[in-house]
Image (cartoon, rainbow, N blue to C red; front, side, top):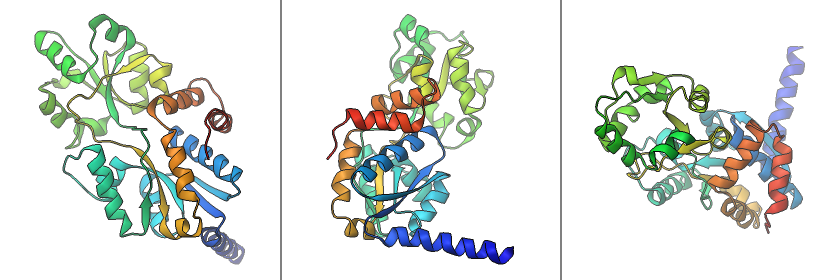
Length: 296
């Protein structure tokens, strides 16, 4: 039995390497959340329509996917500029979106990974309000929120967030310093990230830490506040491809750049909602996207 498993593992590994080497065969990697599943499915359907053979490897953690791509086991993946800068390259300085993109592009070129055009899609953090609270107060930016808090010193402002953000050195404390806010310990409500959306939807809290393209933002009528001081780093989704694969497939860069340009927060937010709230399949949502977007 052990020999059979070893033989199977060898065949799988050889097949993975073979797909990377073949001019029309691509191994497409993806992470383990809704947005990545839909990006992978859109890319897979699109490239197959252009004659490529696509083998998907989804449900991966960021670090595992990155390692697989660096070692040639994954040819193409949608990566986020902020993740590449902070997690993979340990960049701690604050960078504007363009500079961050150029920095990770330069660093990864040394590893044989090519960053194509960054999409307008920016899946970063935001502070979110229930829609009725936003309409009642007229608050649309984090600075406006900070000013309102200062004007109401005796009022309790409960802020829901995940435990990681509450405690990490680039999380809550520097956010407070950047905007001149001060949340007391009882005002900081730590919970599972998914429960933050439910708490906002049920008006259990008036402020929560969210992701800008999560489908529940639209499905639960949550209003993301503008990060007008640009505290949160950019997380622009970008196709990253191993250089030998681009060399073997001369049309691939232009095709992926066209797809990247068609993605933005509104488009992806709606697709995430259709999957997470409306219950549509990833395959159907991807097919609808490709029917309504003309790509080369």
